[in-house]
Length: 446
Image (spheres, rainbow, N blue to C red):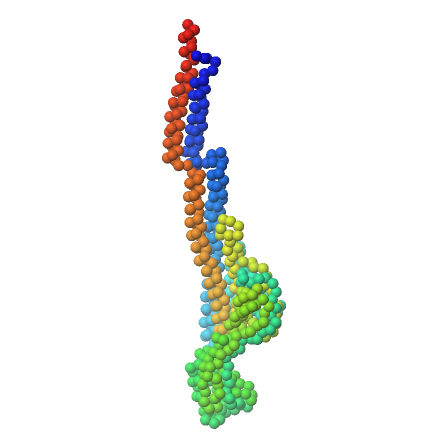
């Protein structure tokens, strides 16, 4: 029996220390709910879970970004809805002004409202903003400029490569037109013969031999707002019937007899043609040209003269939305200018019947442009709603995965804690017994 070294006490102390460490770790895990409180607990698990936490927080922020983006789009779309309403009212006024039931003074009163509505389109375009960002003044799109006024209403899409494109040749769109075979010396000349009959776009006009050319013009033009066709005349030529609008969509049917014979059964206008650098292919509706392939793809403009121009497309100012947790997980939103000049309704005049009728086609084109912008951003909003749903699912699944790595199993840890408590009590008791053991040697010294 030895008293210098109490091996039993040392053994009990060693086991008691290990039990104490285990008990402290269990207390830490149970109180925090986390299995990995420091790198030493699980070095690999800590590294994995920290990367997952970065992704989860990034995904959650991306969700908020997408929700903010939807708010921005809804702000722009709401403003465009009002612009649409204004254009519909302007078209209504143009239809009213195109009728000869109104006097010149009546049309001047209509023009006053027309001017105010045009100004309101500009005000909406220049003041609509989200978080101080202007949305409809072109600042969120691509800036396109031209060297002259031969082209207008310039727009570019995200597909258009920035650069300068030369328009070297062009022909303007033409009206649907047909002319009588007979020619007349003056507007006061009578038709002669047996007179004549002409049917245009379903409207039939009958004239006697004593009716003059001017009476034919007046009768046909009185129905222009219904037929979309007007009659014109110059000395020593026949009477020409032509549409107010231009391009392949401008068409009408006609038939005639007597002095008005010779008109074509069907007349159709032609769309504009251009030779533009960077345009492999393009489409045209009237004088509106849109490039469909090549480096200038997405570039569109209104051709105003059969002459050249230089068109410069700047870098895109499209809004970039971060909708993912990592680099380059973005989507771009481009909103072109929706001012009165950019959609082509500035300076419209409805103080005459002909001007009012011509304004209808211009306003229809403007409605189409605004509709295009609304459709474009509406499609982005739908995409973002799916993005938010996907991000929510990804966040949920990744949170579950991170929880399995880092969070403590409370039931399992409680079992370990209870075991450590029992061992702690037993170890403490045995430590006391081991310390009492050397005292037995004293019995030998008596």
